Image (cartoon, one colour):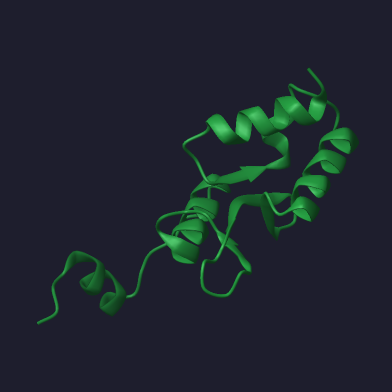
Length: 104
């Protein structure tokens, strides 16, 4: 099994949608993993969302353009990336009320 096959298999089997280059250090070296991830981005299987951060991609049925495959959309990808990076965050009052369903 090639390095590319191992990376693809790990991505496809994962329930997560956001991946860092460091997630694949047990498969191959930094540069090799980077080349594989770039090929996956070029092929439309991944989207690069930041330096060393990637998300699963799919084609939009209406526009035909690539978009995050996460069921939660771009917002879900952002939250998953923030958690993956270990960044502490807090929603503003109105956003939190919206999430909680407390509109009044």
